[in-house]
Length: 255
Image 1: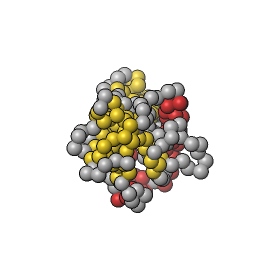
Image 2: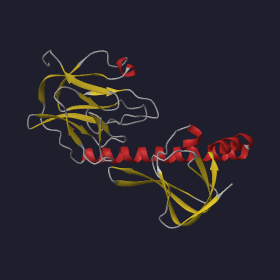
Image 3: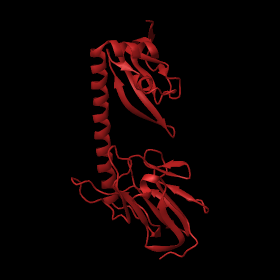
Image 4: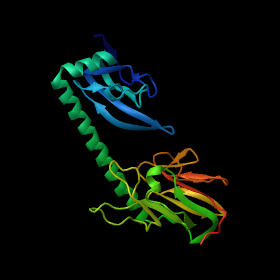
């Protein structure tokens, strides 16, 4: 199988490239990175003897979900997607190695989520001002997915600031901010304990991310501390927020 040499700072592949091969690092170290709103996030490092780009091939994704960059001089072996999958099928030791590596990555991701939750809660406790309690005419929150509709069977009228968060698991303390709407989630969780708030500022309606781990999507735009802006103005005709909650105008008056 062909081998290829790269030098310090060289890009092995970019996010969005076809996921058509796996690379085995023969020597050196590779950084796995992702670009978020112009900022670079290092997801991890791959060392000598380990595989790179295998997740996209195993999952059958057409495109790379991250970029890879050489740290110093490196050499990699390039393995076609079909050849790699055949090798995994034939070689139990390789399959065990991949399971071990993926398990390690999952633990790292879990630790990062916990750390982010703790840091977000600390920032909230240090004084995030959500403004005064203000009734908002004609705005209600309803479920945006079939799964949430089982939890949220009624329309919730909004008084700003209106905080949406995740209900705590049995081993967790209360959230840093008193939530007006608690939603139940299962691991791997998508909702943070304090996820987002609907706020009124200068007579305009905004969704404000509360330092959530995965950010909040408002009208198709991601906000949050990973993405840059922490709040976004809502369109008058509709407002989509969170991974799963929708707020919109109603013909009835708020209570």
